[in-house]
Length: 92
Image 1 (cartoon, rainbow, N blue to C red):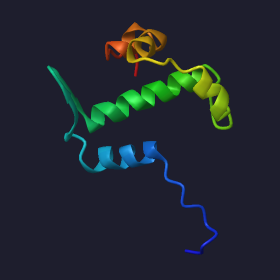
Image 2: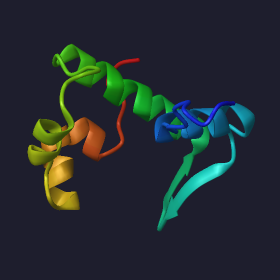
Image 3: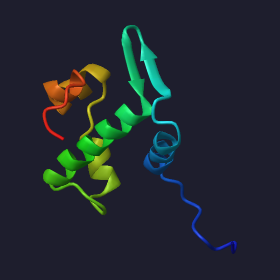
Image 4: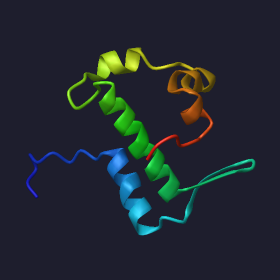
């Protein structure tokens, strides 16, 4: 690998690789909530479909996306909608 090659790592790709390797391994334990890597991957895929459906995609612009993000966990849940905030799947 040459010194000029891009070594950028995408966090989503890392999580997907882990989900493929150990899907039933717990990713998150918070009180009574248990979330495996497979469940995380499925939720991330759903979120990506929702974003693509809303017209967000590659080249959408980091600054505009960041400036419109909620600034607190509660606001993020409200912005995502009740199904995502509650972890419910409404469609595959």
